[in-house]
Image 1 (cartoon, rainbow, N blue to C red):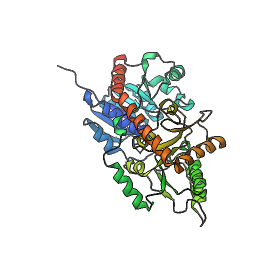
Image 2: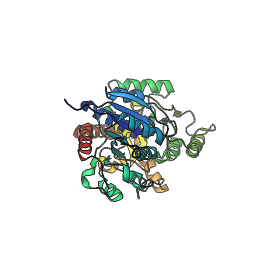
Image 3: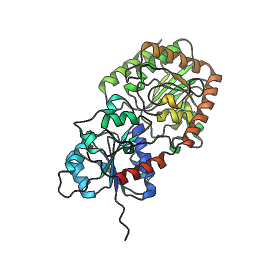
Image 4: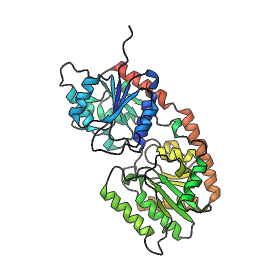
Length: 397
């Protein structure tokens, strides 16, 4: 008799709108051909669960999308359900739960695969040696394999690169109509230029500098609106206050440059109307993975983008060819310096005032993104890495 197919699980921080969560969805989709029953659990402080339906739709074998309260609950669930593999992503509770599973007599210990999205120092930190001891196989979203191997003393066959570029990032049909409808709803004139952003509102995205930059461009006479879609994530009262102060300075008072021109629409289940409504998308980021999904989606709509070259962005985009790419040196996770902000603002202003340059970069960016997605096989690479991880089994130190 054939052996029964054992289940696989994901343990993640939340299922709110975010790049890491969308990569999780595509990993779940990648396993569909194997037929494994799939469970997806969130842990830690209760957070947004926007993507539960998307997880279920990704794979017909998804049976449970729920929450685990702590390491004890994780250990009990792993012991009871007998997973062949568990995917983690910097979750200290997951590592503790897997460690506690080892203390249970006769409990089957799954193969543990860890997804690492960035190559910064904090991504290579351990937690009381638990990552080193509990993770068996590592999935890097671009080629920082050397750093992972050095940080965790890994053999080469225990690391794989799975680049998160996949067809779900390409826009649906008739997205342009949805963008026009959003502009009308917000009262944005057809001939105004919209700088649009959809994603997490967090310190590393540089929005506290983008808002005043757009305000200064408006003060110099440009007919520009700023559209921000998303929520503060992770929750941070300090960053909420910092961004709120920038918004207030740009919008408060009769002479404020963005009075009536800054539109905060909150988190949206579908971001495509935002990109379809935008003429330019800015990302003044201080820290990224391979290629931020918001940039991929914006460029797939034919929208011109201006971005810093942090993380893997500089390996995907060419300054002046398919995007406006501003150097940020060093790529150190810290806020952009005043010089970088000034350079970013100058490139953004050029795109705001020069419609021909917007069209040129938008057309080239669309072609670039479609080519990158077509040349990549995220689902196949993930499935092959999963099979390798199972074949290698547990990493015994």
